Length: 365
Image (tube, rainbow, N blue to C red; front, side):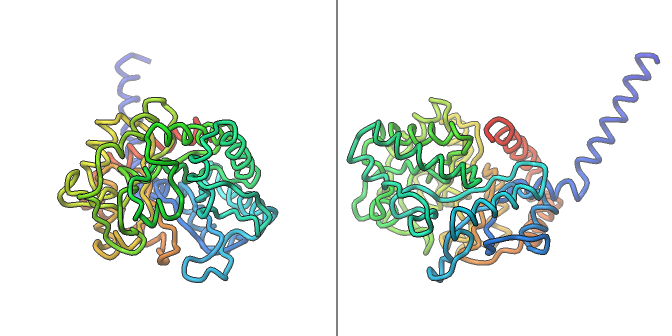
């Protein structure tokens, strides 16, 4: 076969592959890989909605909760170590591609795996910071990482690297979720947490970028403006940990800061996610939103506006916990797909996100 014929065949093949990549089904699966969603069952079957969503859209991940947000007496996904292990095993068997199974297991008051269900107890970040003992912290986080890995959980939305700079802050300081005021102390213990998770192939997620420690409000409940309280020091933990090349994922905050973006909260801000986190701080990993059903977002933006702004801002994975609402995945995928077709979402953002997610799963899970 002549060189000219080979080149022509390769050209035709490239056109075929491109057409295949851009089919509706393929694009919707690319969208699905960018989603992390919550669901209600303790056990799943082929009739479960989450089963069909994972199968149909190749969902990137799920998030598990022990209780319903609106009814703490009702079990949602976690009852016991045995039940949890069976649930995560069932989830991983749905598709060949590894599913990100995530949880908020920080320690202290933010822990979905609780002693009452048969799990261990983990100290709060505040207590670990006050102990200021590296050996103590390593032991705590090694045990936590073992428990997550044994349970089939491969992503922890932790550590929190917000600074304890505002004693009136209820959501970070009040819940003892920060290691302290000093960026170096926060980095020291966050790095130990990350290291122990990584040893067991559990993804870590720094949160909440670009800093929630100076806030007065709770973004679960409404608009949070940190313009007058936030300072550049809150970026230091991210900068230092990114420089160590340790960071798998970073979670955005829904806080509004006029100094960084005069129009949008951080999750929806190109200036924050792309100009600061990507370009200024040099982060090359996956950016995931905080729960997009929180009132700081859902009370002020429609679903279409939210997903369009977040994706175009540079957010790679969209979190819908289904604790503060009940988001239908079919509707969500259709909205994003339509926005791509209408040129409102740049398709290059979908491709970029999928490449980052593929790399993350391949190299870390």
